[in-house]
Amino acid sequence: MADSARLMLACMPSSEGFSPVSTGEKGQGRAEVGPGSNTGQKGQQTAIIDYLTLVMPQSVVDDFRCSNIELLLYKLFGFRGEVVAGALREKNWNFYALSAFLIDRDGELVGRIGVSGNKETICVSLTGAGCKWVKNWAHVHKQATMLRARISRVDCAHDDYEGTRLDVHALRERAAAGDFCEGGCPPRHRFMSDEGHGTGSTLYVGGKGHKELCVYEKGKQLGLPSSPWVRAEVRLYGKHVEVPLDTLLDPGAYLRGAYSVMSELIEGVCTRLKTIRKQVEVSAEAMVLWMERQVGPALNVLRGAFGHSWSDVCEARILRDGHPGRFRGIAKGDALHKFVREELCQSAA
Image (tube, rainbow, N blue to C red):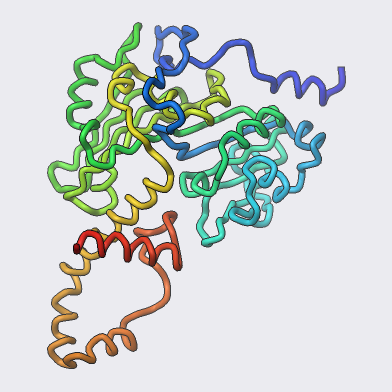
């Protein structure tokens, strides 16, 4: 058998499927269990893909004549310049001898690609900021299947924008009570408290490399202590089990299926656009709060000194190009200005 054929067979999905209830803990079984029920959510997504790493055989990529990185990004994700690759460098990454950064049209770092190594495979990784540019996950699923890609890691995230269903402190108590045990040994959990400072607390259940649930106070993390926004995301790793490509089609089902506790709480529509708008809303309010606290008195002095022309002084002496780091990976330029204007005008109404 030719080496390329052996490689293709070795990279084909195994007969052992991924079980969303497997934690990777010792003594924990890997029964064949499908994702949680999607009752009441037909046609609507309850979660988004917020991180993705795909690994595919180099030989298959060559057979499809997609060795050019830009062509591969187009075939996999449908990118037409939204995300491009920097120059390949001799910089080791994930056991690949050559790697390149992936940059989006806003100039943000949104992923990496590795070639030449790791059993003659190619690895493409997108962060949450990179996943926001993917318009059609069914297309990604189809093309990844054709290229015999496997998922090395995928994060499925659900946002409870108003904080009415997800409570990180209540879930901490449930983890301590063993409610996340799906048979066998209960998964490890850890809790990072903000000790009441309003910066956001985080609960972790499970472990990296297997299956890890992370529930955290997203709005507070973005700098708004009064925000009720809570995010739950499950991080599935393909190191020990096969993560189905179907996860890309219905991430909410796999988030709910990860732990029975989550199947009770994950409901409602969660879309990338709603999440981006919420990020802008929270970040804009946090920015205004910071300005009121840090530079409000200084602006008051300028207004007292220059009267109605104080804004001219600000524009001439203070304003400069760029965007605050809090908006990194969300939006830039006219899109950001539009979102900020809409959110701040709405909150002031």
